[in-house]
Image 1 (cartoon, helix red, strand yellow):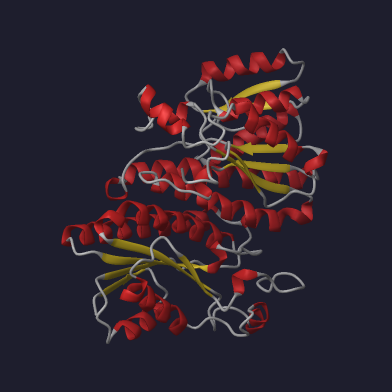
Image 2 (image 1 turned 135 degrees about the vertical axis):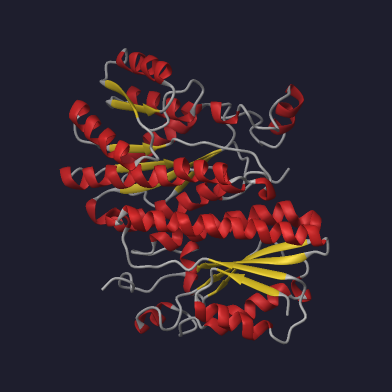
Length: 192
Length: 248
């Protein structure tokens, strides 16, 4: 196991550690954004916005440091960015996740373009609403019929870190049961 | 209209087009007072009211004061264009904290500040307003050495789409425009546009074979702010001469 994780929600970090435990993938660093949903942007307190920016700033410079370390090792490697699927399809009350996730998808794709010549791949996992973090009725908006589990996210991280994804870089892979494809009828499930 | 003063800039082109349609225009910028006052004088010759309001969009209290000043001098807001932006060219490994903070503060937090404050004013006055944010072709096609700039523009897409959903009940539309290459102040320091040969090479990447005139972005904004644009929200209007659609 040669994986480091930063910024992931604790249950995602635990699932990733479990998934990578027996693996022998190339050096991999995973940078996640754990962003809250629930606040509408019009009424968003400045402190919450500033919190988003602080999260993005920390994640950016961690990614930079991990990229620098991989470049210095000169043996390729893999960077994974883990963002909420609201980056792909937002919803009422999900502005911080949409802004932060969209921000980081672009960071990852530019990193992929710049680090490709070093044999370093950079990909994005966009995870759907996590089981236990949102009302269970959100599952009605998921084509596969259930909310996302940390193990789903971890398994795809492992897939992207492995040799089977050796020619994959700059990709944004939704791990969301199809959540980002479309929306549930009858309005947002996120606001009561 | 933020980031609107500078010669050759997109904001100036948007301001001119809106004024030609009869809008009273508040011209905002920072560190460009002479250009701002000159633009205001030009717009007034079109027979519209115009004011120059210097403010740093990354400073929330300054933005709140600006919105109050604009409504006091020109009346309730109907349209807000968040256009102020800054760029740097650094490889990912070389991005400095200073650069990250400045680009995010102006491009992303600045847009949030302006849009939140302006739409609150629109809701308070009952105006069915329009919000137009200048994002970039980077939303669809980011460039090396511009990770933070591109990321701020990507973030604006999330901001626009979420605000479009949340503000629809107030009759407010929120959209963004995607300029390609404009020969504006922001691009003067681009490392790939310093010689005639580099400019010519860049032009070969654009199917239309030329940079955009800022007024071409301005006409797109006029559409989004017009009766014709009433049903357009959460949308991205790319005005780039085809820059994004082909790689070479």
